Structures are given as C-alpha cells and as structure tokens.
Length: 377
Ligand SMILES: *Cc1c(COP(=O)(O)O)cnc(C)c1O
Image 1 (cartoon, rainbow, N blue to C red):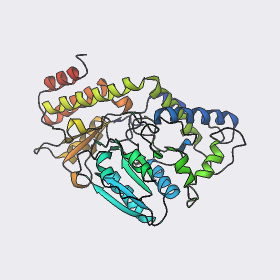
Image 2: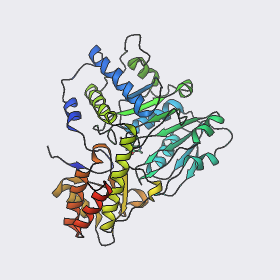
Image 3: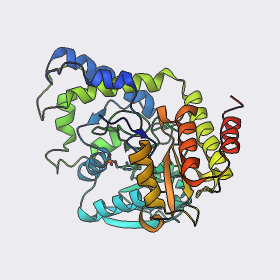
Image 4: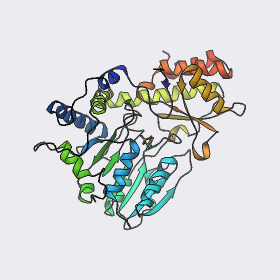
C-alpha cells in the first residue's frame, strides 16, 4: 500500500506497533481474553481523559458517533442547550442538537479565534439542560479553554459537554477537574490509531439523565457489554470491532508512555517550530499563538500559491497529506496536523523540504528555524 505521511487534520501517522496490534488474529467479542483487553483499554482511557468515571469506553463509531451518542443519550426535545460556535465542529453540534428538537442557544465566536468557556458562561440562561464546547476546533486550530464553564453550568443544574476529538492526547484534558459531565473523542487524531472508534466518558450526573432514545448508541447497552464496574457476564449488543480495540489499547499505551507534561511540551514545541519555519517561507499563522491548539497549525496560503494544485501535488508526488480550509476559510488556509507521532522533527523536516521544492524560498533558513524551535537539535 502507498505509505503516506499524514500531516492533515486526521487521520494522523499510525505507529508500527499500533499497526502490528491491529494485524493480530481476530478475537471474538465475548472471548475472556478480549475482555481483559477491554478492561485495560478502559483504564487507559480514564487516564487520558483525566477522570474516574466508570463509564469510559470506546464507542463503535467515528468521533461524530461520539457526538451523536451525546445528543441521543443525554438531550431531549425542548432542552435548552447552549453551544459555543467558532468553527465547523461547533456548527455540526448545533445542527445535531436542532435535529433532535433541542432549543439551541448559539454563542458565536470568530472562525480562527478562541472562544473561551468563560465567554460562553456569560451567556448562560438561568435554566438550561446543557452547554457544549469544542475543546480544540480542528476546522481552525483554535483552543477553547473550558475555564469556569463547567462550574457555571453545574450551578444552573445543567450538563457540561465537551468535544475532545483533537485535544485528547495532544493537550491536557481534565474531565473531572473541569466538571465535565460527558466528553467524546476520536481514535485518529492525537491518539494515532486508525479512524473508527470514539472514546467516550460520562459521569453520574449525565447517566442519571440518559434517554435510551437511540438503539445503537444506547449507553445502557454499552454498559452491559463493557461492565465497567466488573461483575456479571458481558451481554452482546453489537459485534464490537475487536481488532480496533486491541489497536487502541496499544495506541493508548504509547501515548501514556510519555508523561502528560512532556507530551504537552512536545506538541507545543512541534507547533511553534513548524510555525516558525513556515513563517520564514511567508506562510503566516491564522490563530494567534496564545489561542492556538497545539495539535493543529492553520496557516494562510500566500497569494501567489494555488493551494488546491499544490496540495494535490504534495499528496500524489510526495505522499504528504495536509488539509485545506473549511467553510469561510476554504481556499485560504492549510491545516497542518501536529498530532502525536506527527509532532516530531523528522516528518516536519520532510514537509518543509518538499514544500520549498515546490514553492521556492530559503529552505536552509526555514529548516534552521525549525531546528531552533526544537531547541537547536
Ligand atoms: C475530527 C473531528 C470530529 C469528527 O470526527 P470523525 O471521526 O470525523 O467523525 C469532531 N470534532 C472534532 C473537533 C474533530 O476534529
């Protein structure tokens, strides 16, 4: 198969060990050996999410399936739900909530700027069912710090809901400290697993409100299969994607091999080093540094570059994938992944070298800036 360097908005580079785990002989979903994999996978997920929630498990779906579970399992028609919207993924949640008949209160932010939770908190009505924030808005690369939103929502009796798809594994996520009641993620961003699983966590307050409206995304059915508290036989609901769960466990072990502080520092360094190198070539960052999500760097495409043609050449001639802009940023920005195994000097060097071959510019100076960003290595 073609071996692409995945430096787009996801999927991200999958380490050899994770591919190896994926290629192990398939186990049945009720095999006790697979049960041990499930238990350890759930325990590792609790660590990356920063939670003690027993109900923490990978849903059999992509990240969007995690969002759909949140909506179907925790929101009822007529519920007032406040949604922070400063990019495609906030927009998508507002859409999903509207479809189930929730009363959506939008708090708008500019695409390319952060929308901090504290700003959303100012707009909360006295009574609400829930508030939702996208932690790292992958459509722009802005980080929406939850701040005091969780506490403000809890004060009003609502649920705090968080999209951690691109943040999980790349920037610290502290579900319990931030008073987040439910959160979802995706396997293919900073966790460096192929796409197909949606890590999900829900606390007591969220579970008390579960609806059972969806058959497939029924949290009770997931609990009966995952048995988070131990005890009782696992009950078949759907055939769990066993190879993917084995691979996710391996991916989580790799993520957690690195201490939290080191992992964050590496993503930060990788983001800033790449931004500095691209700046030398005239590609300026979209999101102000203080508002950036380290796992995704958005840069403005210079006027004299046909970005779609260049992106296609990079992919088909050089096997490097980067992502274009979305919505109002389509044709204007590139979104470059700085995710997990992709947040390292070697893939970034390859990208800068290939880019200068196509667009010109001082390759040596750009690589020097990259290396200086990595600490003079
Ligand atoms: C990728 C992404 C999603 C959607 O995940 P899929 O796996 O594509 O379904 C949702 N939210 C954010 C912030 C994302 O980056």
